[in-house]
Structures are given as structure tokens and as C-alpha cells.
Length: 386
Picture 1 (cartoon, rainbow, N blue to C red):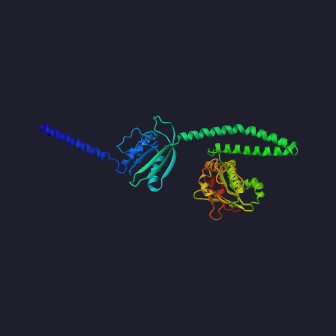
Picture 2 (cartoon, rainbow, N blue to C red):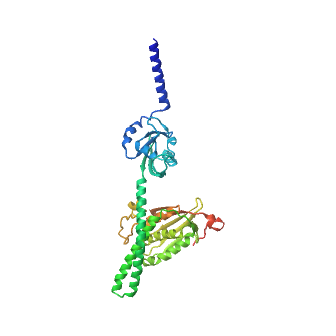
Picture 3 (cartoon, rainbow, N blue to C red):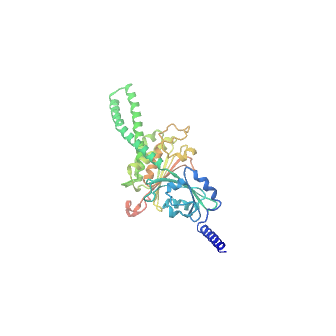
């Protein structure tokens, strides 16, 4: 009898302990269980959190990326207790309010003492599931970042090495051009043209390689005056096609920035418009200040054939050359708009490309931040129009 009671007590105690353990650590929902086995062999990280942001599933790749050695399968814990990543938390919260997948990329710093390198560039894509859970796929972008940095260093070193001899060759060719007579002078003229093209390409490479750095020592720049200065430089090219600049905006507008880089940005944008505009058509450029938020919009619109729709997602990629339109007779190295985006980004702004809904021509929309108080007397917004 005593032995029977002992067995019964052990059975009841074990059953109570099992149910208590189940109550403290609820299993993943049945809808999530099929994921557990499937995600284990994925080459990229994958994790699933429930409605309370408890970590339900996590494959080995995600454990390595996020240093989640403390997490044990079947023991849901708040993700915040395991991973201190503000960007990951914000990505999951955005997923709960958006029906489409959310994407984020950031530098993840593992906890002190972990063997993982610091930092790791992660790219995550999250999606809200029908069960209320959120699935997050993680990709280690650090090898790609390091490869890109090595490539940029190589391009920078190469262009620096090319710049000096090309400049010396140009000086020699110019001296020969003045001393020779036709027909020998014709060959030197062609040589000078090719040298100038190579020097221009080298300058573009340098801008691409160095353009990621932000503006360190901004100075006051009159954007309206800069537009006029750029147009005066490009006007000989515009006169060949009888093009004019239709400017709309303040007579003077100051912002803080790098004047040389902003000049390069406007020069690339207007040069593109001149290349692809039909003869005799004006190029519209407007500057529109905004008080809330304090940003200035720069819109450049031409009357050409516009951007091919298939090219729009890739226009700002380096070396991208899209479809050739029958009306276009010129093509570049595919760096002009990439340089524009880098300069705008370095100033904390944004740039978008589209075809204008009215005329169908190419439309570049640039937004740059500005602060009125330090640059304008009394902090007033400039309203005087040209």
C-alpha cells in the first residue's frame, strides 16, 4: 500500500511539474511548428517572434549572427532580453503596421566579450504572418561591405596615379597644338579631346570613390547664385542647341554646404538636361523653400523623351547605362547621376527621378536641408522671385 501511494505521488508530482512547465513556457503555435525544421538548414538567418515579441524560432545562422547562444529551443523569451538591437526592434514594429515586407540595413554590435567581429553589417527583411507572428530573415552583408571598401580604395589609388601623368600629357599636347600647323595639328586636336575625356573620367571616379563622406565643414552657399554660375559654364553647350534656362525661385537663397560639391551636383544635372533636350526648348529649374520641415526642393525638368520606365530603379547606380533612345546621340560613363546622389546624400538630402506627368520629360527632384537662422538676416524665409 505504501509503495502504491509513493508511485501515485510521484506520478501526480511529475504530471503537475510537466503541466507547470508547459504553463510557464508555452509551445509555439501549431501554425509556426512547420517552420522549425524547415529553417534549420537555411544559409541565412531566420527567426520568428510572437505577438508579444517573444522569440519562438531561431535557426543556427541567426544564432551566430545575433550571438544568441543563451537561447534554447522551446523556451520562448522576449527578444529584447536576448538581443539589444534598436534597429531590429523597430523593424519588427513596422512590420506589424504594414502589409508589405519591411527592409532595414544597419551595423550590429554584438555584446561585449563575444567572438564576433565589430561591427557586422546586417540586412533584414521582415513580414507579418496571418497568425500575428513576425518572421525576420537576416543576411550578413559584412563581406560585401568590405569588398566594396577594398574596391573603392583600389579605384581611389588608381585614379590618383592616373591623374598626374594625364595632366602632364595634356599640357604637352596643348603646347604641341600651338606649334604645329595643319594637317599635323588635326591629330593633336584629336589627342587633346581624348585626354580631356580621360581626365574627366578620372575626376568622376575620384568623386564616386570619395563622395560617400559627409560634409565636414559646411559654409554658407547662395544656391540661386550657384545655379546661375553653373549655367554660365554650360551655356556654350546649350547655345549649340538653342537651349535656355527657365529659372523660378528666390533671387538669393542661402544654405550650409560644400560649395564645390553642390556646384558639381548642379553641373551634372543640367549637363544631362542639355544632352537630352530637343533643340529650342527651355530647361525648367525651380528652387522651392519649405519652412516645415526646413528643406529646399530643387526641381529640374526638361522637354526631352524622359527616362525609360525600365531604367528608373537603376538610374543612380554606378556605371549604369540604360536603354538608348533614338533621339539620343550621346552617352556617358554612367557616373553622372551616381555622383549626384552621393553629393545629395552627403548633405543629408534625397533625390528622386521620374518623368514629368505634364510634358513627359525627365524630372529630377532634389531635397536638401537648410537652416534659416544662421544664414538669413532675422531668420526670414526668402520670398523675392527672379
